[in-house]
Image (cartoon, rainbow, N blue to C red):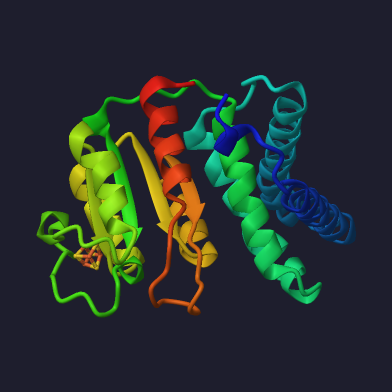
Length: 249
Ligand code: SF4
């Protein structure tokens, strides 16, 4: 299995906060139901919500067991991801209170990559989409590559050159996007089966939840000059991600 997918990543923080959030939700619901025991309609109306969060907890247990056993025993992605999404807000809030918000986001991205690594997802090159952030282009570059990466003349001042060298021979779709809404519009239009996205933590997390039926492998960008300017991507990591989706290994 590829190094990008298989190597130990700090998914533990995310799992811990997800478990804590699920248990808090369930405890709060049980508390309200117990307090409102004389109001049958309220207890009955909260019951489906309680069942939903028990399912959320079950999904978490399945994911954790899958990681521990290194076996794909997870629920389908169209169920798995929305169930995780129900916990994300509270878990992120707890992480913020604890002062570990960025670590939590990184941990969630690592967890998603680890779960994806357990699957043997293979796609054809034309079913794969590589999304790059606008800020990966050198800020002094005068070529407009937002709508067409072919306008890049491969001068090598930014990572676009090397990324094109990986994806162009395989005819993999690649796009530079200016933000989440443009990325979503592109995904709606192209309907890829899998996405490799390079972005900052916040954009990657929202992107992963925005496309619940699509496999997304997030690669956190590097920001040697600060956020949103001349950012870099791990070209080796991107190559590895492309190989993983095309071969399933
Ligand atoms: S590699 Fe392409 S996008 Fe990057 S600075 Fe050179 S011409 Fe511009």
